[in-house]
Structure formats: structure tokens, C-alpha cells
Length: 123
Length: 143
Image (cartoon, rainbow over all chains, first blue to last red):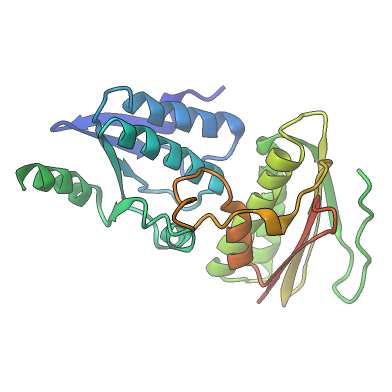
């Protein structure tokens, strides 16, 4: 069984949780579930601000999109938010086709996404 | 499973694979298809489109068709020529009405976790057709 730590690396960046996917593709039931567990573990703290980096991810499926939507909903319910970054152009097209770019704030690089939370706090 | 093998025509014979309902099983079929596409020098956009659509079709078959029941099988046929790719995927479920799937891009559905697989298949492939019962999908991608 895949462990969440095998799929995601989680760190704190000045109060913002940075999540990087370890695997280029998340595909088996165990990997998708582990991704969900990893992401859900970061939403246990109410109001959590999260940046999810897709660096190195060349492929994803609607199963992963479903996991992201569930995490986004949980975060929103507690006053938190997830922002996405480093999405490969072909993978980004999946977000535009499904119009999930309307649901998520998406940044070119993770440092821009991290900075956007700081800018919001200053505003 | 009641599906019959597709007929052979100018595209040549179909490759058939049957496997139990497990997402881990997708990789072998995906690898074979991508290898053949690369041998025929299909470009990266085609590889991405076919890989995504094949995976979505297989995930749908396992998830919505077979309800992840490992005792149920998924059957896939594919054939690849220099000018097009044809893929057929069948599950052992009761089928569904593709027209009844809600639009995942509608405002009221945007935050719902399901319903995007078929949409992606229709966007990335040139033809996507379901059997009358809805437990089999046929997809074509032209070069």
C-alpha cells in the first residue's frame, strides 16, 4: 500500500503549507488514495493556506482532479484555500477544458503562489 | 461480458487485452499503446491525448461500470495504423446513459468531484461513441 509520504512532500513556508507531488503520475487506487490522504492531512488545521506544486507532473486523470476538488472544498469550508503552481502546459489544458481554472487560483511558479498569500495578507 | 470482438477491416487486426478491475492493470495496456504510437512517430500531443483518453475510459469502466469489483473484468481492444488510433473498452456493468451525465463545467457542478472523464475523452479524441447499453466505448484519434 502506498503511503502518503511516498506521493507528497509537505513543508511549511512562512505559514503556508507547500505540497509537492513526488510522483510524475498518480494512477493506482493506492496512489490516488495516498494522494488524497496526504492532501487531506494538510486540511486538518482550519483556515490552512496551501500551495500545491505540480512540478514534474506530466500527466493526471480525472480521479486526481476529483481529489483536488474535495480538498479544495474541505479547505474552503474551514476558511482556507489551495492554490496551484508549476503546471505543465499540457496538464494545464486539462484544467482549462474542465474549467477548473475557474475554481482554483493557478500560478506559473510555486514562489509566486506562496507570495500571493503573503500579498493577500498585506492587503 | 457479452461484447463481441470488433470486425477486422483495412485497419488490420485488433489487439485484445482482458484484465481484472484494478487501476494498476492500466499501465501495461497504456505502455503497449504508447510504444506502438512512438514506433509510428506520432507526436507528443497525440501521445498525450490517447494516453489520457485511454486511461479515462479504463478508469470509467472500472469505477462506474465494474464498481471496482476485482471479480469483474475489463476488456480493451486497440489497433493503431500510421494515420489513426482506434480503441474500444468494455466493462461488465449495467451501463449508463451518457446523455444523462451532468455538465461538469456548469456553475452548480464545478465543485463536484465527478463527471470530467467523458468530457476529457470527447475533447482529446476525434470520435467517442458509446454502445446503446453504455457499457462499451469506442474512440478514434486521427493523425
